[in-house]
Image (cartoon, rainbow, N blue to C red; front, side):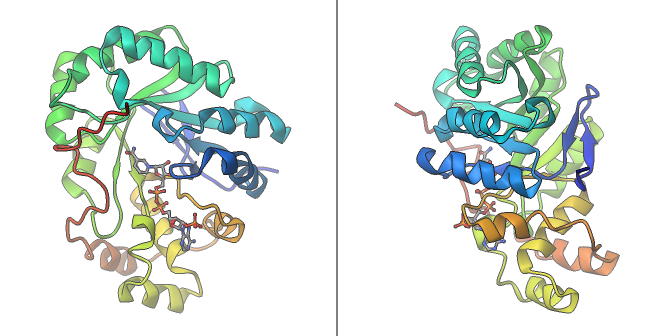
Length: 279
Ligand code: NDP
């Protein structure tokens, strides 16, 4: 079965499916089932993180699926507890072992944590694992423009992606544009704002006229903007609903109407202040 999902080519030539499945807040004991449902629905891209506590279960679902693991793109992220060079290298080893795939497709610095550590030093560890071919691509998450500027000025490898909170109430226009100018793909986390945008009258109005669900309209908006997305759901019907995005297209006025909903409103933490380090 060929996949309907288009691929975005990262700045080092590695292709990433533009639609994936996120497993933040999927309890470890539900992760094998949720990822299995997603794989059966056609998803071939899973977004996890050391801090989600379910990397091992993501690997297990892939191993059980019968799908060639090299056909599934897997992202994980460095825990906030392991910034700095040696700690990050060791943390990568553990992520690689937990996933059990013999490689990590994309490895990210989860949060810049600029008030506690030096993400430039941490980035050197990611450059090392990329140079060794153990991570096919490396990137960052929750980096603001100033963080990216400092990283670009002080390191060898340009991040392949910046994974940031992004949805119709937080469109992140300046940060997305900065990424595009520098070959950094924007990945949108909480793409439906954990449901908060689904009741918006603009969204429900477009959904009604298109005979689509509000989630499908918002996810389609992301895809047409060029964002990579990985909505999370533990509800099988929603997992399938969120994948059925490739047989309709929003018009330019519909795209503009959704973008105009921006009110710079976060549902998650502000990266400039987020300093949570797991114990
Ligand atoms: P999402 O925007 O994907 O929303 C998930 C929530 O929406 C869940 O409560 C889910 O409910 C519900 N939902 C999903 N699909 C539908 C639908 N079709 N209709 C109605 N409700 C729906 O939020 P997330 O925060 O999970 O973000 C997605 C992914 O982004 C994460 O899983 C993670 O991979 C990544 N992420 C990264 C972060 C970072 O710091 N880098 C931070 C946060 C997320 P239910 O499960 O009950 O069906």
